[in-house]
Amino acid sequence: MEEKKLDLNSIIGFVLISGILIWMLWSNAPTPEELKEKEKKEQVEKQAKEVKTVTSTVASTPEADSLKTAQAQAQLGSFGYSATLPSATDAVTEIKNEVLSLKISNKGGYIVDATVLGFDQFEKNSKKAVQIIKDNNASLDIALNTTDNRTLHTKDMYFEPKLTIEGKNQVLTLQLKAGPDQFLEYRYVLKPNEYMLDFAIRSQGLEKVVNTAKPLDLEWQLKTYRNEKSVMYENRYTDIHFEYEGGKDNSLSVGTEDEDTVNDVSYIAFHQHLFASILLTDTNFKTAKFKSENLVKDEKTDTIYTKKFLAQVPLEFKNGALNYNMNWYYGPTKYEVLNSYDRNLDEILPLGWGIFGWLNRYIFIPVFGLISSIGFGYGISIILLTILVKLILSPVTYKSFLSQAKMKVLRPEIAELNEKFKDNPMKKQQETMKLYSKAGVNPMAGCLPALLQMPVLYALIYFFPSVFDLRQKSFLWADDLSSYDNIIQLPFYIPFYGNHVSLFPILASIAIFFYMKMTTGDQAMSTPPQEGMPDMGKIMKIMIYISPIMMLFFFNNFASGMSLYYFISNLITIGIMLVIKKYIVDEKKIHAQIQENKTKEKKESKFQRKMREMMEQAEAQKAAQQKKK
Image 1 (cartoon, rainbow, N blue to C red):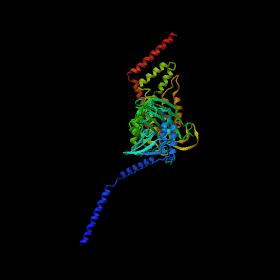
Image 2 (tube, one colour):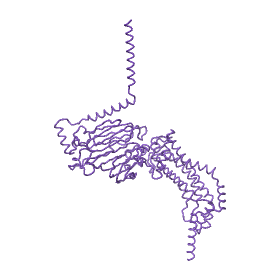
Image 3 (cartoon, rainbow, N blue to C red):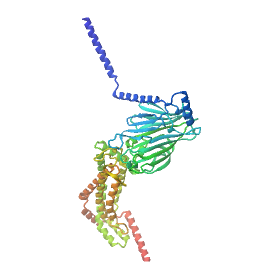
C-alpha cells in the first residue's frame, strides 16, 4: 500500500510540475508582433552578412594583388585603394520597409532602384509596382578634385557597404576609401513606414587626398519614368521644383526645355505629377543649377520617359571635411503626406497661386477629404462636392439671372433711346445712364456674380490634377479618375485630341452648350448693340458653339474626375436656373417694379453724379467746338 501511495504522489507531483512548466512557457511565449520584429531583424542581419561576405573575382595571390593595386593606383591615385577591396563589384544592398524598397549599388554608392510599395503602374491587370528609379535612369555623382591633379567621379568608383540595425531603423553606410581610415561616406537611414529617409555625406582624413580649397560639385540626374495612363497629362505636371532664399519656391517651365540658377537652396524636387523624388538639406546649398529637358517629342512614340532632370550643387568643406545632413523623399505627392513633414513640400503641388491655392489648401482639400472618408467612393464624392459648391454659389447665380432679367425688360426702352439719339452718342449714353438710375438697374450687376465665381472655378481646375486619392479609382465606365476615360480606342491620332474618345468630356460639352444657350441667349437679348462697337449679341451666339468644341478637345486627355465635375456642375446650374426662371423670377413683376422705381425720387450717388457731370462737361465742350466751327 505504501508503494502504491508513493507512486500516486509521484504522479501527482509530476503532473503539477509539468503544468507549472507549461504555464511558464506559455506566459513567456513571444507575441506575434515580437516574432515579426525578430524575423525582420534576422532578415536585415542576413543581408548585412551577405554584404560582408562579398568576394573579389580576382585570384587572391600576392602577385595578382600587387598588380591590381598598382593598376588601380595608376588610374585612381589614392582612391585606387577602393578598387582593391572585396566590395569592388556591382553588388547592391536592399533596405526596405512597409512602403518603400531601395537598392543601393556598391558602384557609385547611390540608389539604383526605388520602388514605392502599394501602388501599381497604369497598365490594366498589371501588378508592376511604381518604380521611380530603375534601369539606370538616375545617378548621383560627386566630382573629386584630388591633390595630384585628377578629377575623379564617385559614380565610377566602388564603395564598401555596411548594413546595421539601430533600434527599428535600418542603417546602410557606404565608404569610398582612399585608405583604411580615409574615406568619403554616404549614410542612408530608413525608418519604419516612412517615405522619407535620412541621408548624410561626410568625409574623414581626405585633407591630403582631395583639394579642400574649393567646393566639390554634386550632380543629381533623373530621367522620369512614365507611371500614369496619359503620358501627355503626366508630362504636363512633371517639373523641377525648388525652395530657396528662406522660403521662396519656384519651378522650371512645364513642357519646355529650361534651365535656371538660384542661391541658398533648401530642397530640390523632381516632381513626376503623382510621385516625387526630393532632396532636402539642413545646410542650404549656396547655389544650385537646374536643367529640364522634355523627352516627349511625339506622344505616339515617346511613351517610356517624360523628362530629363539635372541638378548641380556645391558641397563646401568646413575645417577640411564634408559634413552634410540631408534627407531623401521617394513617394506619392499626396498633400497630407507632404504637409506632415512641415518642410513646405506641399508647395510642389500645382494648387495655384494666391487665392486659388488658399481655396484648395484650406477649403477644397479638407472638405473633399471629409466627404470621401464617409465611404461613398470617389466618384460619388466628386458629385457631392459639386452639389455643395453649387449650393453655396446659388445666391450668386440668382443675382446674375435677376440682373439679366431686368436688362431684358429694359431692352425696348434702350432701343428707343438708341434710335432717338443715334446721331449723338454722348447724349445717348447720358440718357441710358439716367434710365438705369431711375429704374434701379445696375448694368454691371450681371458681371459681378460671374467674377465672384471665377476664383472657385479656377481653384478647382488646379485642384483635380493635385488629388492623389483619385489615382486608379474607378467610377462608372472610367477606370481611373486621375486620367482620361476612353470608351473608344481610335486606330489613328487626331491632332490636339488624341487617339481615343472620352465620354465625360462629351457629356460636359453637351451640358455647357445648353447652359450657354440659356444664359448667353438671354444676355445677348438684354445687351443692345452700341454704335461703333462690335455686336456682342452675335459674338455670344458664336461662342455658344465654339466653347463646347474647345472643351471637348481640351478635356479629352484630362482627368475624368475634372470632366465629371464640370458635367455635374453644368447640369445643376441648368436646373437651378430653370427653377429661378419658372418659380422665382417673374418678368411681369420685374417690369412693374421698374416702372414704380421710375416714379420715385432716387438720390444720386457720388459716383453717378461724377459720371453725369463729366458727361455734361464733355457735351458742353463738344457743343462749343461745333459753334466755333
